[in-house]
Length: 248
Length: 257
Image (cartoon, rainbow over the protein chains, first blue to last red):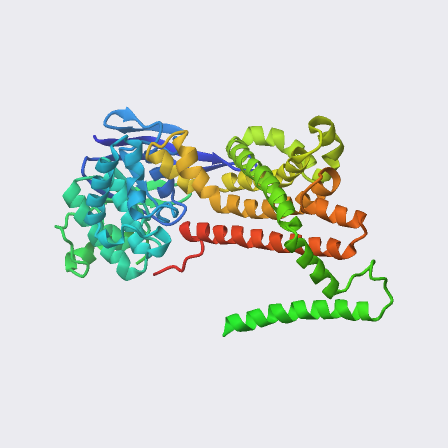
């Protein structure tokens, strides 16, 4: 299996010396090129799990392996996209996209060429010289996406990336990420608490429950792409997810 | 329209101040040597400008100021970056810094003269001390307040030291550092004059002491006004720089949604 998460638990020690178990024996196996959504209410440990896969933190027990190698630290092969974009406001769009390429020790011309290619991919060629605060939320997230893709990671880890966007922009961004996923063949792990978003994007939806965070069920979404948010099959799967959360 | 009103406000405020001053002089209850009249002071200012005294002293003061302030800025920022980044070292150093910070730079004067003699150096060192602490403290706190998200991003993209310092931490902390430099500038200018009053044979501070020694209270006041004006100009200049930095960093720009 490409990504194996085996019996992963994570506990934090609080100020009063008590421990808080955020993740409890999570098992999850992900195929290469798969689009996985981690879905659950806040406090179910989905972001913590993403941070562990990213290597920002290590599990208390259990292991996470990618291609057979245990994750111990962050890597340029797995780029995280944050809800608040994580752009550097003092750099303009093109310099933001070049950030990861600078660490790769590419020549300046080569960096510029790659950055422009990915800015074009996300449709921001007219905004190369803008600084992030001059852009709308949706555009900023496109910049973050271009920056992540420019270093050609194998895995994209997305932590509620569209959580701060309005409903319309959010749907456009969902179309966009699906298009890019199909074009670039990445493995994507996408954290969300939006049921429709998960049904629209995921090959499999991993439903998590809180305190402590556990995997409750995994729902396959066998619908063809590009999915119609109003089709009967779509609504059937949405219905299934609602049932899992006892929202019906 | 708003601009004209603003200018009028400034003019009327100054006019009122000078008017009250003139009225007090007109009561005749104070000796002209104790409180010179505005006209007398204006004549004194003209005298200082015409015979070149002002420009000579101003140049000396400014070059001392620039030297002391630049050294304070460079050392304050470099040390601040290192200390802000190494939390343990800072916790160790901070008590000493907090102990030294409230001490007026002038208090060091006896030692400064013993160690560095007289001339330009004592004034420069006093400016340095005055400018160093605000710069150091704002840099340290700027570095410590760097959004952890930026560090995560850098970590994720494989950006290591020293690039981390120059590409992420310094620019992220820079708006706060610029603010510290602004405060340092004001403080340093105040202590420049004080330094020149106790240890120098030239400069704007010396001009005041020299005028007092020759019992020219009009020139004392003229000197004070010049110091005020040049301090104000310096402050405005660094404010422009600060504004530019804030725009570059997108701190003050209107957001689009």
